[in-house]
Length: 328
Image (cartoon, rainbow, N blue to C red):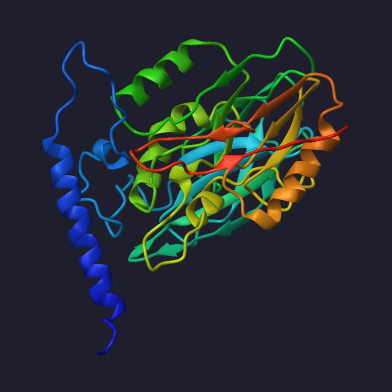
């Protein structure tokens, strides 16, 4: 008997997902007093049936306007500015300066894009600017036009204020969390995994980028991957294509071989962002990087899972046991 075509398998998969989402939506929250049981990941997808991976992104006022703007450290005294445009002709340039409306320097960067199933991303721009002064407010615009943004660089020494969140997602609790962060003075945000809870649903990356832009465009967001950053559909190749394209971190600047783990210096502290879902052949390199830095003072380590972890979640079997032993 002939094997079923890939198109038929894909249609059957979407049918199963649609039925599963309907069943999940029909299940209510536990009553007051009952033990809380973490719901399946898809329970929070309010519009799963109408927003499959090919759904169109929400249109901005102009195809050339910067969308989903966020910044991250890019080596000593440098910052990476990332944004997306629907117009592929927009140049990957950032104009910036220390006075509002006055841009004394222009930096040029690179761009990328990707496709997943029937989804195609906009043009993703990455521009590194600097050298920058510490503890200074900079004003900038993306693509040579459009609205003005501003950010503040971290201080050169302690005190340093870090906002640390995880499993941010896109629910009503996300808005509450972002509002709390906004009310607190902080120099940088660390997000060790599960940013958008997009899984394979690419439009959720766009809505997440829009959701966090008001904060992520004003302070550097340093992130690493979690399990919900990984695209995983049966019969298709798994990976972190969307995460790597959209959230480029300073892995090359820190000597890492992968965007999934890296380290950086800030205000005299050394921060290590570990990857909990890297391929086995990269694990040795990550452990070596960790071991070489354990002797440093003021060391901060973040990762989606602990260095020794057997995690049960989403009603599945344990996703793995990670044991790391480093001798220094």
